[in-house]
Image 1 (tube, helix red, strand yellow):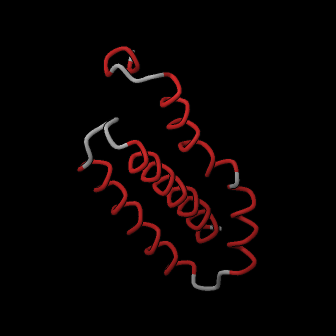
Image 2 (cartoon, rainbow, N blue to C red; image 1 turned 180 degrees about the horizontal axis):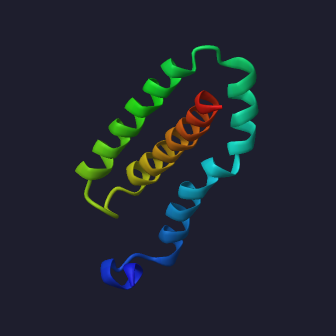
Length: 94
């Protein structure tokens, strides 16, 4: 439905979905790195929460499917920040 409504090519939709899922594939390695290396996890939590807010503002402000590179990289950075934030929060709770 989304592809038909906006008239998006299937190649572009594949690119966007790839940028959406790739950061979550490396979540297990992020957990090892954050548990072993990061001492001040709360600082990283605030840093990546700010990154989430910034990329969300970029995603809201751009026109959809007209600027492919900006949209793809914003989605990628948003999901990297989300994955790191998820791992950091889990390590703080444990």
